[in-house]
Length: 379
Image (tube, rainbow, N blue to C red; front, side):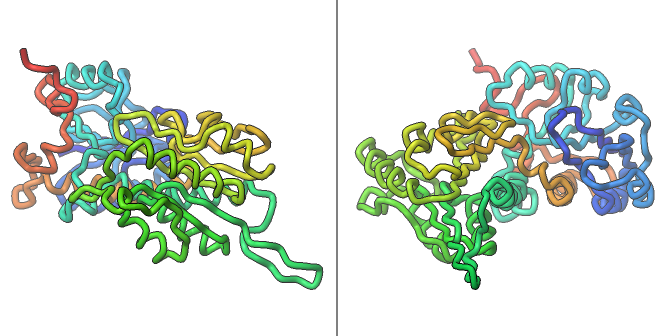
């Protein structure tokens, strides 16, 4: 069995899909591991460290992919990479397939079995494979660090002989994995933190981290969660009341972090230009959804924009801004998933195509798009 780990082709991608730690574990499963030279450089991993763990270093992409049974990547393979992969290879990555039907079809035509790690079901068994959580956690942390770098004042309250420096006021919109980590990090830095979310259960989580929960808590809000823990669509009347409350709250904030993403859809608009105009000059907004259109009007992907005196930070690939940590967690997610597809007794690759994890994540197989969300409708 042979695994290939290439250097990521996307210019903004700094992460890598394997670390020396996971290479050692893959070797114990019976795999030979080939790493493209320089693949780990931006994650602070040298070729010599991979070699010490038992990997072979390949000089280029062609020799990396040659005869590989499994390919581990951070992002979906491009057309040039697909040409180098053998038919039947298992390719495991974050595939970002929504709106990319042509790219998904190209993977099918290449004959690979493509697995989208972001589709991993959120069940107990798969927690160690949950790339969305591992990477969002780091994105939430990094968002606060980026905010602190852009903000021209101190985060904690400081009492000095020359006077008192007030604590920064941070508002986190969305209390999922990224939002909760942003709350925790901002609190550690000494900020006064508030947060909002449409799920009633999030109130307790927010308050457990020492932040104040902001929402219109009427009867509709109290019933705004499904049995599975997801948010229900809210009425227009509720949305109007919530928007009015948020708009008033924004006028008092120094830093706002938005984290709202909906799989397969454009990011919801949370902050309008009018809301930005009401904020204090010099305020900072971090938009973690900028790659999906942004939660903030005026946000620009890959840039720091200024609207009405407010800086809107739209960094791309936020987990990759702390690549060493992000790669470490991501590589462990991949290993945990791949391990379920190996016959450990005979040390052979043996995917169980009926396994719920496999069925949930496989996009293409045997020359066809097989995931129900993307497969062509049957006539």
